[in-house]
Length: 453
Image (cartoon, rainbow, N blue to C red):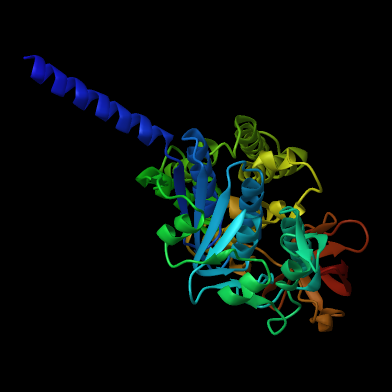
């Protein structure tokens, strides 16, 4: 029994030593950015960094493979990396172009795989065309500031110590050119030679080895199914489509009494629009209240007050402003330094373009397949058909002057006359003329004949 007790005690002590040893090993946390840079990838990075901080990670490896994307999302990711106290190592295993280059420069160290490239950060539009110079100037200043944030170091040349930039800002600036022919793009060897890369590595294991870490714990951020769903609804194109459904659903619901499919579609789209933003802490309750207040003012203007005036315009402004504010992360106002107005471009563009397209499509659909009274306030549907009693005088029929006519209804002074079995609007030139009287047409003005006995 004593021997068994000794063996069990020894095993417990050994397992306890292993646990303690395991807890002392440095933790390396990996976050993969292998997609276009947009709000969903921004969300992945932020959640990954938060999780790494919760676990007290010693190193964060950011595995990058992207051709770039939205500048506002890239700037938010860059800012989050620069404010991170834990060392972040970028591992470029294929491409780090455009916004990917900006994110890589923000990291403390950069490693590249063979065949990888790094640079080409010019601002382009959706078709790949280089944007005007003011956009490139803004991007150059952002690249330069990011390189400067890495600080300086001392180097010894010919026995003299000199302080130089760790990442030369002029090189970062050169990655943004005026055209595609004058843009700097590094291979691994070129990046190493210009101090923009610490070395080459073919995989994460080699990166860790170059950090000098032999024994370690390793964890990776893995988005859940809910994370993927929320990330999907944070895509700009999906947000734009949801705004169109909200506007269209409300409009069509106003055309029919009761609760129907349009209202259900609008409410569902509103939930899918606001809920991901609210869960991520981007949208706040007061921004949602602004949207509700705007919608309430629009409904009051339509159903309570005549015409369309101050309440309706105010409601539209509040409705649009609420949708825009819900897409803006208010944390951007808390960072020191110059404010990046580029972060407001996407919310304003998405809401404005979606709203315009919604109204254009609604007007077209209503005119084609959904006749309503409300549309008559925008476009006249009634035809002034002569068979229904509508009469007038075509402006070209000046030959009627001097013609004889028979009064069809008393001219008091306005009424109607008959000429060649056709009715015309007419007025008595002087006094009143009774029905059946023969008159002469003396002049025509404003689509009306003026007659005398």
